[in-house]
Length: 381
Image (cartoon, rainbow, N blue to C red):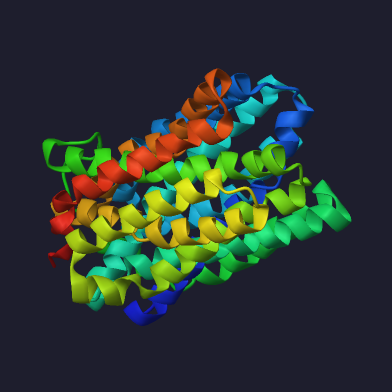
């Protein structure tokens, strides 16, 4: 691996976030199709989606330990390649059981890669002494938008096999280029004598807020397309645009987020952002037009976009001697929300309706705004 300068590593990490988002965005158009193929109701399908959560939550504390042992650059490289192959599992799973197994494996890879690339992002941010986490997460949002739009088009005109192969090959090539420009593994290897990364007292508050923030993102990821398809009776490729437009709003927010954070501070930024997310999501769920709903999803994405990056930055700074462990602790709780939230929405939808169940994400955003003062650690260097 070529040792790169912090400026080159900044773009390499951004590209890694982008390919991570592309793979997740490419999976989105398959979600309503998987639900229909497996002939599962909302509650059962929501329970099946819990396998992704189980894999991620199982792997995240281990990822923190592996980063401390081998460095975040090494783990980011390995998981980046693994994700490109794990991506195929849930798409082609023929039964509910194989879907659950494939989801668990994919969840492990997603969770490990998320911890690793955020840890390397913190290392780059420290080397540059500039806020960069929002830009990195902006890369994820752009990737999610591109993956959703490209995936929807390929799925519509060329089918599932071509769609999956094209997205996987693009991401494999991007990972190969990015890995050559990471910072050396030594920048965050072996900083702490304690490897394991369960949440500590210092990180539990940020972790709970991260749970809510990523619960919102995960619920929109897994259920927005289904909600649009069922409510407006549109095809799967059109329904997938909901997540694409949501990620578009998140992309704009995150690409400007580092500058806004320097001017306004983390606490004020999270407060306003969470209230925007609540407002936009509520509108998307009640408006009678699919086009107005898409516009509302853009506004909601503008709101939620910068919440998770600030929480991750805070987690990395609460444990300066082991940023990978600190981020793993926050993301262990956070990804529990990202991947446990959708099953919760599924159970609630079984009792009420899907739009009504998704109002839980509106409540979560209001709670984040109320407790935003706990994110002030993100502004320390």
